[in-house]
Length: 510
Image 1 (spheres, rainbow, N blue to C red):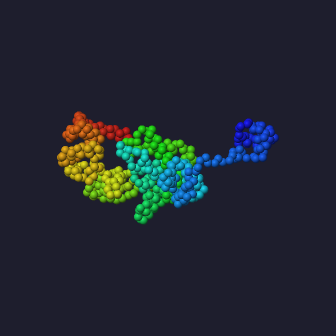
Image 2 (cartoon, rainbow, N blue to C red):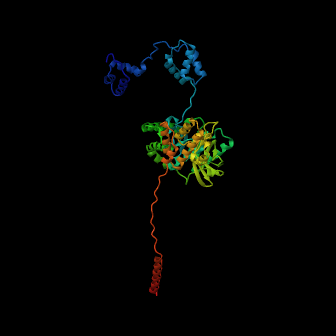
Image 3 (cartoon, helix red, strand yellow):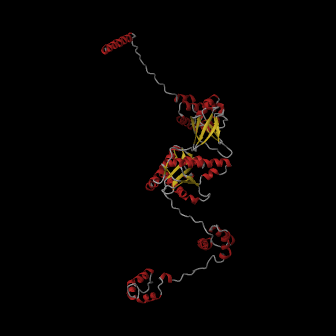
């Protein structure tokens, strides 16, 4: 029709009809004139290819600087950002406006596509079922997890099968150590119920870093023993090349986003205990695995069976218990029951706990502590271990090295500080120690702390005698038992009956 341009679609229709029809008929079916058909017969290019490119409608703002300044910058510093180039140009030319940024970005991107350096190529891999399992650690501090109001400094050990996407996550309180890897990996394999043929990790590089040669060799042997126990071939990606571990690196982000969503729905990031938080992580991971039931079932057919049992996933040290009522391990002081003073304990070091043995007999399990800083160690103190001795020497509390760690709850520390503010250090030590002893003897640590906090909030000091009376054990009434003794002649009758019964049995036998 007059005034309308022929489109590429009309052109394709015309060429299709032209296979069987004349130019006039094909043009009529395509919707344009016979004259246009004869022009197309002479030039079969689509209309879009006949348009001349539109020229610039305004002057190029980069023309004075492109060849003289911008290109030399790009050649001298290939990795520089566009904003960096723009800032340098505006520093040199004060009259240059910042609204040229988009133009500069397009021109630099086009130049780099034609003249820039060669880039690294990521080669996508095809994973066969049952071959590869991957391990890595990921930081989850952004989740803001707290345990009873206290921030939890931790990370997650993350295991994943490359083919099916089965995954397992384990809360790690320390660093990327061999112990954390061994415990997390074994938990993952036993949760899976099978073993892949190959295990890939980059986390062991952190365990080897900054170690002496003998320690590095020892860790290498332990890792090889762990792999040998499960029949897996150990492999590692190149240091600093994260995409070589991409099958789990990308999964880190998905897992953390799933945890974030679940925390938002939960309404709070605080948990009653570390075990409760671990159960929460297990639940979220379990839901994700449930969505992959079919590929996981397919891959399990190609996996190897588990060995008969787990292997060692802890470090072990033999340490003497000193007269201070504890021992020092890796710059952290731990208290133990004082009856163990002078003995040597065999300590199994896990990521989150210490299991102490006297010979082969387990005696105590302790929460694992961490040094406060490079120059200051840490303390893991249980007041129950030392309260009996502290009760005999209460003034030792005043300048005790681990005094702040001795108080099991904030209320006890608050009471001690309040009593000291009244100017009587002796009374502060005496009352505080007696209340700690009361909490231990009556097993009322939490209830007693609430009572102390209520008194302090009311502006009064706790009454030690009243608290003792309040938390004393209830008097149990002793039942009256009446014992009726049988007369002695009854036993003579029993003996005579027994003799007569025996004679009658002999007569029957005869």
